[in-house]
Image (tube, rainbow, N blue to C red; front, side):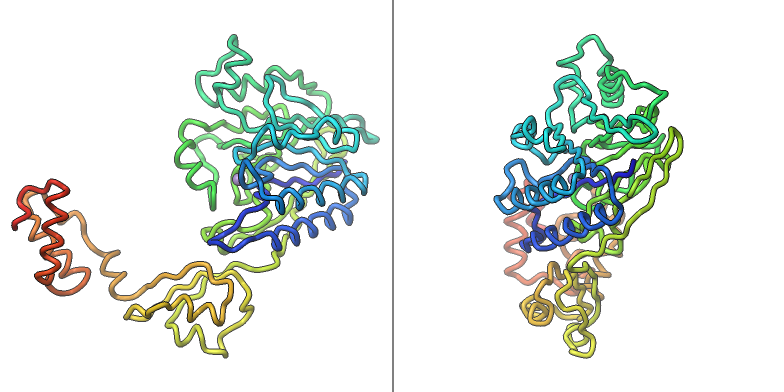
Length: 385
Ligand SMILES: [Mn+2]
């Protein structure tokens, strides 16, 4: 049995107002080619198929084409929903699609549905646990422990009668930790990890019964505590924080029970995402411009702010996404010692300090006027200085 593990496709996503549809069409095509070259039996998609609950027409078309091509090549697809997907919309047509080998499990109904495929070693069971909240598990299983997120996921899994003698795989879209070790979050799940991470965590030991754990939710490819429990990661970089990461798709070969081989196939995007840094003159010198169509994050080291520098850079780098500065002013802000601020310092002294350290000088009379007004509105008492 050979299968590909995907997750966090986020079809329809754009990044800094640049549509990534062409990049997504390209990467899905490359993934399909890997599936064909490897003669894979199945492709697993571990949630966040779409970027939003109401996907764009183009995004729907991308998924439609991808699933059709896999089905036409007799590759089974097993797909669960993630927190970005709409359960009901993704579920549309799922009963009909099942006959073509496309298995969509997007609604948690108290069970963990299982798709079973056969090879010469016997059955392989693919259990499907879409993204689910603890309250939803509690609704279906009031008798089970759902006090913590970890307990809820264990309870959800416990109702499926996993046969430990046979080969078992689970698809799960959750924030999975290993002991006290959190996954390296990157990109769009940063916020999710920080906000819900502390409560909506599940330890990887909850998945002990499974020979392979196909996880979605975290965009940076990584293991979750063991070699056979991993996040495939998103197929493309969906955030500037992922610059320098490498994307891949795990190809899993299962022979008899206990014999698993995992190979990571590198994914090369249509446009690379890069960080460039230097004075504007250097960055726009034709001698220094390569792969101009890449997605660019530029840091200018010029001492003075250059009006509309992003438009100037865009002439050379049409896909520039972000611009910031790094110079003596930004260094002053970074090095500013906030511990020096004490409650005893007056508002006027604080402002004088701030101007001296960050801008270099005293506030003008007009600026004082604005500062006093702001202080008054904020309820600072000694705003008169
Ligand atoms: Mn995601």
